[in-house]
Image (cartoon, rainbow, N blue to C red; front, side, top):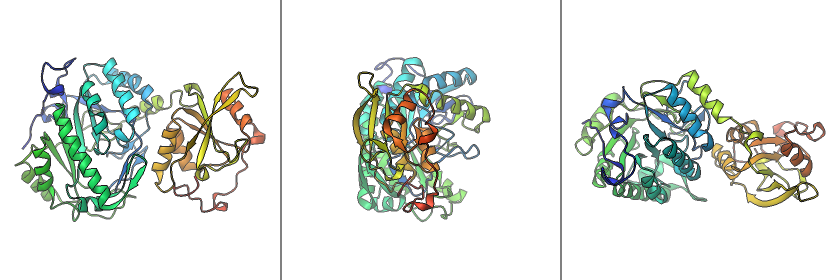
Length: 443
């Protein structure tokens, strides 16, 4: 059964500020999906769980699925970017944040972006797509910002099944695996649905149909979420993704998807026009990514990213604080310095920050970039190309050098290149202790 979901944010037509026309949301109103467009702002790169069906991949124009983006957008560039896109696409009615990680593994970036949009474009529909693990502490603020639609990806209401779907979750700094992890995720998802509905927010449930994993379980999902007041359900066919744990799992056939939608439709309205949007999607749902949009996003993502951005600090990988002498992947902590003209050197030590633990793959380097969100550069003795690329894509320049910390700081703060005498002389990665650039050892 198809439906149009137009519940008012804040619970009623008179209970909150600027009114938006919710019927224009193309994902929740099938009649609108060929008339009104949406834009996803990729400001949330980190994720707080690892799904066995997911392999987040950046900069792939021909791949359309959640978790994919051409670039990560700094929150400070979100409103200027949106303004330019709206000038080119007048039918944009919805602004969403859907990754490429999870919005609430990146709560500062997410909330800063939403506040900026609501102030500049009060008429826009605001929506989010999340796994539900970290949203609960932010629901009151989302309601105050009139975020009207939230999608929660929920693939099971059985922790045993969940333990097969999720490799790990991270609750704050606490990594969890297995049934305990799946149970915590489920508890958070159920709480999120209940509280979102209490706040008058429209809730859509995305559930991925995985043969042999959860395909006999969808009525249980539909019963549970409908009982909590969810508005609409989107049964999505599993698609194998290269590099994911479920890479060899066969997708369901069309008949299985149709049958599941019909069964769940007896309990909850169904969405059938989903296009598996990228984290940087622009335009109508059926429109693919264009070269023009990719170039625009990359331009805003890199606008003043390094030295022109004005970040106050520089991070240094150093064993004793005097020399830059640690490899990115070997540093358990970094030293943070700031400019201070009152000191003889012109720089002052600020604080120590512990680096994320090894073993999380690419997510480790996204966490490093988040840790250094206020740093314009990171000085290291060496770094692998993949970690370096991920961190720099988040706006922190990774500079390889060997020598005095003060010399490196001077180069950064005067917008000069690292002196040739300090540049690291390259030795092959294989000469280190097991370096693979994977996040499990050195960088």
